[in-house]
Structure formats: structure tokens, C-alpha cells
Amino acid sequence: MEALDRESRGQVGYASSATALDVATVEADDLVPLLYKDFRATLFSQVMALTNHDRQWTEDVVQETMIRAWQHSGTLEREPGMLRGWLLTVARRIVIDGWRNRRVRPQEVALEIPENAESADRTDSSLAALTISRALVELDEKYRSVIYETYLAGNTVRQAAQILGIPEGTVKSRLYTAMRQLRKALGEVTVR
Image 1 (cartoon, one colour):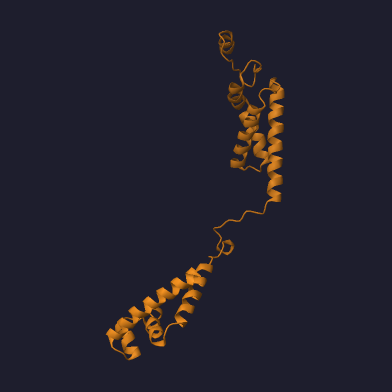
Image 2: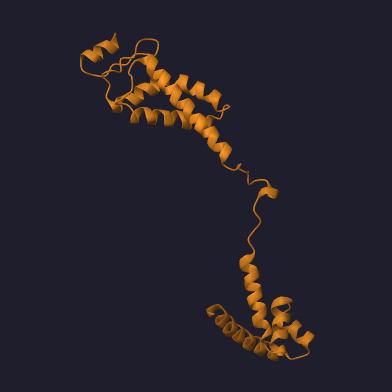
């Protein structure tokens, strides 16, 4: 009775899905909320069965169905039984398209499984090591040995001096000169 009162005052009337839904006078923007209110539960349960109980996919399908109802609101048959059939048909077709897309698309792989995860790309580090190796080869042996003992072997200046049999000051000065020459050589290599 309240729905009829609202209709007579110019407002959109709403009736439950148990009674006839008068959507003939409903504007396009008001149609979707009414459809959603009346047919969401039915649509959701039907689509849930079609998607193997994938709740997220079901919600996406219901939402897409309502969007299509809004897009076609001007041409929709407004009788409740016809609307229900139209909505269920559109939803079923969306699910079928989804299943087809999943069959064509490569299988998605969970990245949490270590053997399926991509290995780190070591191209940059390999290229850098190759570039530094080439620059080191061009250094004089006395500079190369100082760099090897300090940077590559991880020794302190004092330990490098003992291993090489030269004073600590000489290790420091050769290291300084070697680093300058390396920077210059690496600068030239990267410019090429």
C-alpha cells in the first residue's frame, strides 16, 4: 500500500520480488538500484554455482550484469519475469566468457612457491664484473695486487702490507693511484 501511495505522489514505487515490480515508469538511473535490490540474491546464488563458488568472481559477474542492465535500460523489457531471465542470461554469458578466457590464458602460478618463482636477473652484476675485470687487467701488477689484497680478499691495509712485503704507506698510495686509474678506465669503458 505504501508503494502505491508513493507512486501516486510521483515517486518511484518499489515492490518486493514476491509482488509485481512496476518498473515501466522507472528512469534509467533508478532502474539498477531496484534491480539490484530485487534480483541480487537470486542472481548471486545462480552465478555462485556457475563459478564453482568463487565469491570474488561471482561478485564481479553480478556487478558486470548490473552495468549491462544500466547500459541497456532503454531497451529492457520491464516485466519482472523477463528482467529476471535477461539478467540470468547475461550473467551466464559473462561466466561462460570468463571460463573461455581462463582456458586460453596461461595458468596463473603462485609466487609463494620458491621453485616457481623467477630467479634474480644477474645480467647487470655479471656485466659489471666483466667490465671491472677488463679494467683491472689493464692496471700495472703493483696496483692490481694492492686492489686484490684490500678489496677482493678483504684484508686491511696493514694485512695487505704484510702479505705484499711493502710499507703501509706504499699500500695506501698505490691503492689511491689504482683507484684513480680504475675510475678513469671505467669511465672510458662506459662512454664507449
